[in-house]
Length: 289
Ligand code: G4F
Image 1: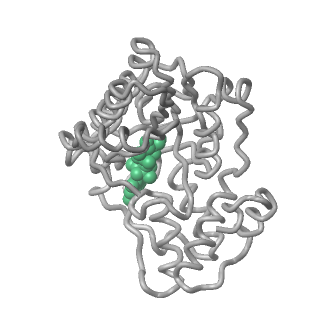
Image 2 (image 1 turned 90 degrees about the vertical axis):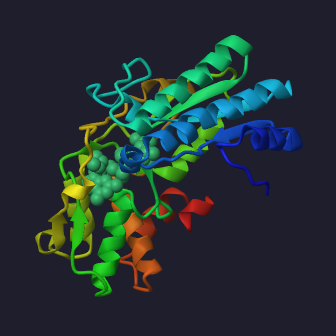
């Protein structure tokens, strides 16, 4: 294990020099959209310039290193859905603006220096490992916490926002696939379906037999100065060229996450989420995680 910091170009160069990697998957970022409004400069430094620091270290190393840039559907911002590789970027947050910059740096290092750099424009991808302040995990954790009698309400922001939510392990497998492609290219990855935060709440609470109206409260603290209303991936390029297929659909994802949080709270999972994983990924570690 090597340690580094995306704000420190010398350290990054040393890591690239010492490891001499074949492939770099750059997922490091200040990745929380709401937080980026509170810390816009820091977000630019880490999320935008961090990518440049790695690309520059790769270029200076002179080694043949493939580079994956974790681009985001947030870059589409106010562009109407469905969003594909040719949809214009209209970023709606400091985070999204920083990701647009990093996207173009990867494209420029590809075109200018011949570096194998690819942008994966990934729509929201979730799992039991999702950070607790992102909305999906916040909801599924709250369900477990309410059932454990440790929490009696859940404060949320905009329930009308719509996202294209998929299952993260599938997306990570596709990141690897992108770097095995014969040439560096950009791909949009998502399920092609959008659902509102309200629908996510409804699915999670009804799976647990809870009445959402008893628990959900709105706190304007969680509103964003500018919101992304709706994201839906048009992944046709990835489907045709790299056989992308999202296995886990919205309702299944919710059940997987609720079951995992119940277990984390020491409760018996309802079991449907576990069954879905065993059935769809019988030979994969993420089927039993
Ligand atoms: O879960 P979120 O914070 O994810 P968001 O903003 O879509 O960004 C995530 O996905 C992106 C990929 O498209 C990544 F690039 C990014 O790094 C991150 O992983 O919020 C989802 C939606 C938003 O519209 C937000 O306004 O949920 C709404 N929301 C409503 N109440 C809330 C809450 N979001 C959070 N985090 N907390 C709430 O209480």
